[in-house]
Length: 471
Image 1 (cartoon, one colour):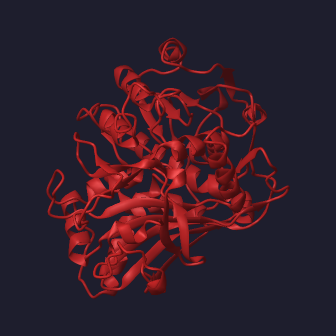
Image 2: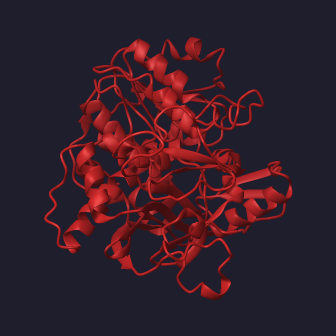
C-alpha cells in the first residue's frame, strides 16, 4: 500500500481502538502505513471476536469485552493517559462519555459518528429530540474547552471529508461563475460565500453500486459497512439542517428548542423517508434521508445569524441510495416492523463489481446543480489497502486524515470536521478516493415531473424541501 509518498508520522503514545467492525479493520493498514507505529503501541477493545485474525496478523493486542456505562472507565483507564489516542469506531459506546474521559486524562480522541450507549436511540424516557444526533452533538460541543486535548467529532467520509468537499465545491462554483473568490479565512467568510453564490440546498448524495455474490437471502440484512450502525441510524427520526429559504416546516417537522437551532427532525425514521437527489452516474434517483452529523454541522457552520430565523442558512441532508441488497434489506426490515433480521452480513471479499459514488450536491447557485465527489471501485480499494471495500476505504481515509490533524494539533478542544483545514484534509484523503470528479447539471427536484405534481408542490421555488421529499 503506497498510494502517495509520505514520511511516517511519529506518534510515541498508545493507541486504543474501541470497536472492531469493518471500519476499524479497514483503518488498521492505513494507520500502520501513515504512522510510525509499533504493534505494541496498539490495543483493540471489542465486543466480539469477529475479524480479530487481522489484528493478530499485525501483532496487535486485543481484549474482547463490551464497554458500557458501568465498566468503560475501569477498562480504559490502564490504556489511555496523557498523550495517548482513543479511536472510537464502535456502535453502542457513548461518544460524549469517551470524550469527557479523554479530556480528563489528557488524551486525543476521534470518532466517525456520534453514538449513545446501547438503547439510547430508542429510550422511551427521552423525547425524539433528546435522543437525536442533534442533541448528541450539542452535548459533545458543550465539552469544548480552549486549549483542551483535541477531540475530532465524526471524521470519516460522511460525516467527515464531505465537509471539506463542500468548501472546495463552493470555490469551484465561484471560479466558474466568474467570482474572484479566494478561500475564506474563517467560518463567517465561508457562510458569506455560500450566500453570495445563492446556494440553497446541499445534499450528501450517495449511490452505492457495489454488487456481491451471493445476493441477499430472505431473513438476512446485507450491507457494505456496519449493519448495526446503519440500522441504528436508519431507525432514528430523520434529521436535516433547515434552511433560511424554507417557507414552512414539514407537517411532521419539529424544531429542537435548544442549542444552535440549525436542524429539525421529522416524525418518521430515516429509513422510511425518501428524497429526490442526483448523482452523475445515476442521474435522478430516490435516496433515504438518513440522519447524519454532517447535515447538522454543515448547516450550522454556514449560518449567518442565529436561531430559527437566521439571515442565511442552507438546507442540508444526507440522500443515500445504498447498494441494492441493502435496499432490499431495508424494505424487509420495514415489513418486519423494524425488527432486525436474524442474519447479518457485511460484504467485502464477496463484492464482484461496482463503485461507491459519494459526493456533495450544491443546488440553487447560478449554474443550477454541482456534484463534487468520489467514485471508488471495489477493485481499486483492494489495490490501495487490504481489508477495505470501496465504502469502507472512503471512511477509513477520513479517519486516518483526522487522526493526523489531531496529532499535529493536540490542543484544539472539541472540533467538528468543518473546523479543520479543508485543503490539507482533501490532500490526505485524495489518494484513497479513486476518481474525484465535479459535474454540473440542470437537474432540479421538479424536472420532468409536471404531470405528476402533487397539490402541495411549490413550482415557484424548486429548492423548497417539500419538492425534494417523496410522498
